[in-house]
Every structure is written in structure tokens, then in C-alpha cells.
Image (cartoon, rainbow, N blue to C red):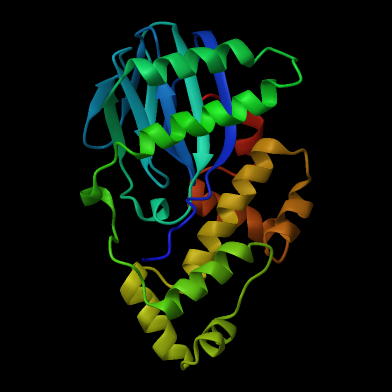
Length: 260
């Protein structure tokens, strides 16, 4: 039997907001997944290819590295959940997915809404289980054809991916990855790019920016500390890489604290 992957789902942020009146943002580009459900109409989401009005009858799931914009027509109620997911969901095509809203997931969201303001001891446990259940329900709706890479990588590349996914606090040189794989550096880079469509260092930077997004979301750590913790030379190098990836500086990303 093939090895089963733990998709490594991490919940970054979850909230339910009433009467949203500010939702006009251009060229959003996140390194994590976004799930939206509005039980009232009034929000529009768009890309360069389409414009779509969000309705209570559907869920909106936005894959990482998808460029989109939002617009407000009328105040609306808004549930959102930000999360990251590992193999194989790090190989989903960058796009916006719309799924019919089913009653089971809506009930789970309503339970989440009732627990968010609660200070009960068990609320964090229940919230964790419910948010993971909602995420898993959404990911199960994605068709196989949406995966960039359905077949397993070679064991050598799988091992390199495992190293890069774990070592997000430092830059792992290609020489070290190639040596671990028992290959020449050029041969390893070619094989990695052939199987994943991206170089090892670009993949590493993407994972480190993803970690930085989580730290900006969930902690009050300084940009210097986050830069160090994600393997960048300094805050300036980190800020430049972060903006190139997300279209926002780390300070802008943290300051906004908006529900996209």
C-alpha cells in the first residue's frame, strides 16, 4: 500500500462577522487557502476572467496564490476561514472554486459561530474539531483534475520535500538536498523542477512565506524576529520577498486584519 500523507491542515484564522461594510480590495494574493460563506448577499469576488456575486447557496474556496479582488454592493454577514494544507493540496491549481452549500457544513459553521465568543474551557477543542471538519469537507469536493500533480514523486524528491517542509527556519542549500539524494546538484534541480514545476529554492521560499503569513496572522512577533524565524537574511530581504509573493508588505498584511 502506498504511504498515506497527512495533509497537515493548519487553521490560521476563523471568524463570523455581521454587517460587513468595508470589502473593496484589489489584487489580493495570499499564500494560504480562504473559505467564504455569506448567509446574506452583497459581496462580489472577481478575477481578470470573471465577476461573481457571492450567494448564501454556495461556498467559495480560494486556493493559494490566486489573484483576486473583492467588492461590496450591500452590507453582508460573512464567515471566513483561512488555512494551510500540505501534500497533496499544495499542488492544487490556483483558482477560485464554488461549491453548493450543503446543510451539514452550514450546521457546522453555525456551531462555530456559537462558539467563537464563548470562553468555555472546551470551546477551543470544539472549534478546532469543527474548523477541521469544515476544511476537510471543502477539500473533498475538489476533483482530481484540479491537481497539478496526481502521481507520486520519486522517493528522492519526496525526501527533499519532507526536508523543505520541515526546515522553514533556514535556507536549505541545493548542494545539501542533492547530497542527501545522492545526485549531482544540476541533476537534482532538473529532476525536482520536472516533477514539481518549480525549483527547490522557489519551493522553499514559498513554504517560508507561508510560515511568515501564519506568524503575522497569529503572533505579535516583530518583523525582525519573523525574518529570522523564516530563514531570511534580515527584515528588508524578508519584506521584499513577502511583497513579491503576496502584493502586500508584511506591515500592510498585519495592519489590515481584514476579512479576505
